[in-house]
Image (tube, rainbow, N blue to C red; front, side, top):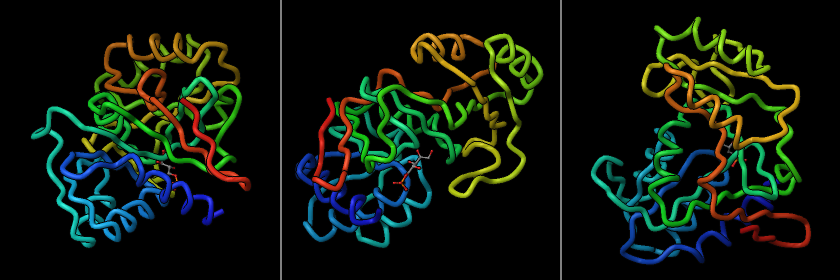
Length: 221
Ligand code: 5RP
């Protein structure tokens, strides 16, 4: 599957212009893109929510700047766990989704890089929606998501690609849903619960997805 991630990362390079600030999320496809940016010798500044990505950028000689110092991002790239044809996406593992969503919102273009196994017609929610929440709100948020049909599980161990608590030190609640008819309505309801800082459900930020399959790259926008 790696050749697909590599071809996605190669395609992404076409969206980057010199002398711009770009966003880079986390994951293996993004790490291939960092190598490509270095090889192409592009002059860019990078903002990232991911410590691993920041370290890799520094190792590759790319300038990393803090997100708070930037008011506009030309293009941001990220991976996800699942994306659908309506460009709704679910990101679960990393525990850095609040900053990921901030960078996504700041970017003129927020582009997901995925292989075709992650593309679905409509989000299946086989991955949980992750909520970053204030500790004091824990019981209240658990109760509230149950009334929306969710099954909340406090994250008690680090996922393979992420943290047990958020990068801000807040509680992560993995919420499983059996069936979701309307992702946008769910996002609105979850975000309206006091104590929820952000969810890992992206319903309006993604502007396109580069989907790598056996017959090349498909662009969804
Ligand atoms: C975690 C994410 C990551 O961005 C995603 O898992 C990275 O995927 P890959 O390693 O396949 O590029 O959203 O929730």
